[in-house]
Image 1 (cartoon, rainbow, N blue to C red):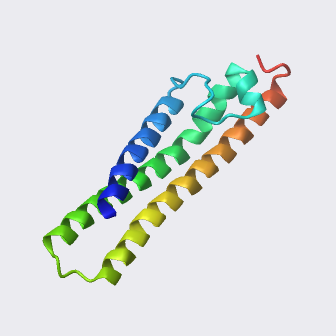
Image 2 (image 1 turned 45 degrees about the vertical axis):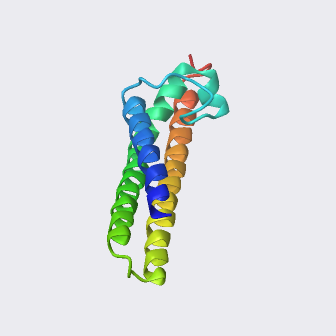
Length: 132
C-alpha cells in the first residue's frame, strides 16, 4: 500500500511543481483543466495570468509536500519489504501519516492558491473595467 501511495504522490507532486513553475512565469495558458479557473480568469487573459502568478507559490508548497510524502512512502515501502517482522500497526500508522498528511497538505495549499488567485483576478478587474 505504501508503494502505491508513493507511486501516486510523486507524479502528483511533480505535476503541481510544474504547474507552479509555469504559472509563475506566465507560461500556463488559459485552459479548462489546470490553474485557477473562475469566471473572471476564464474571460480575461490579464486576470488569468494575474491569478496564476498569485497562486504559484502556494501551488509549489503543495506540490513539494506531495513529492516529499510520496518519496517517504516509497522509502517506507522498501523498509517494510526488507523487514518482514515490522508490525502491522506501525506500517498502517506510517501509511496514514504519509498518505493522508501529504494529500491533505497538497489540497490545503492548492485551495490557498485558488483563494490567492481569485483575489488577484478580482483586484485586477476592479482596476481595469473590461479586464482586457
